[in-house]
Length: 338
Image (cartoon, rainbow, N blue to C red):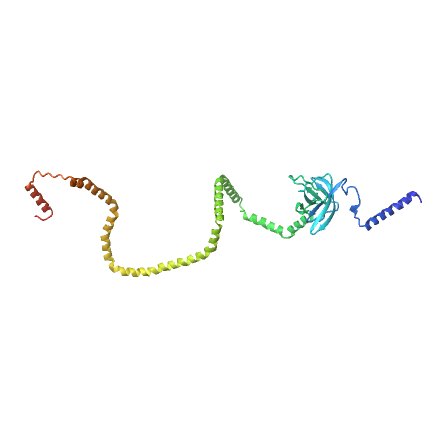
């Protein structure tokens, strides 16, 4: 047997033994140190909490700002949270506010872990063993979920509803193009009018805001009105009906009072005729009284008081004939002498 023949027989046997040995120890194919399946150089581990890591493959890439900085090491379930441990290159500096998201580069591509640092973050960076909490992670939106949602839309009656909606919208518009143009022109004019009266709109909105503010400040009173108003309104309705009945009943009383006063209407008319001039005199007394008082005051001040203080009477001559003639004239004027 030649050396070449022996080598050909030993190589498959060694390979088969190696495969059996690795399979017996529970080693996965991804555990074989093939170049490209693990990060090169020094690394540190970071634990990332996800609500779901469905379809996340082994040795998934860890990418930050479009650059591959690490790989997924393993996943473990702690309670209801999936914790993914990743190995990140030692030169990658990630702030503590870094967020993690499961993404796909293409529709049918593998899912990878995308890390994104906020624009404004602290100068404190993640260290070996640190955790990115579930509040800073976003699960993947798988293409299966998208296709399932589209299937529900198409087969669940939503598409038919959309067709019905489009048909209803088309039926709502007039079939005559001229009528549609008129509606469009009217709408355009309305919008133009609103745009040219923005000051009035602002004033209306400010007034409405003040009204709502006052209603808010008087919330207790409004609540009381709405609570007690219906009951009291019902009571008011009953009171109004009773007032109407009282007025209707007073009609009969008025008829009886009219029959009672009818015989005395003549006397009442005479009394009114007598009292009317007196009432008018009293009514105008406030106007004529000051003038009369002023005249009387002038008489006392200028005539009577000076005369009583120093009366000056000078009798020069008594004409008996003239006095007699005046007396007869006065007596004749009053009807005592013919």
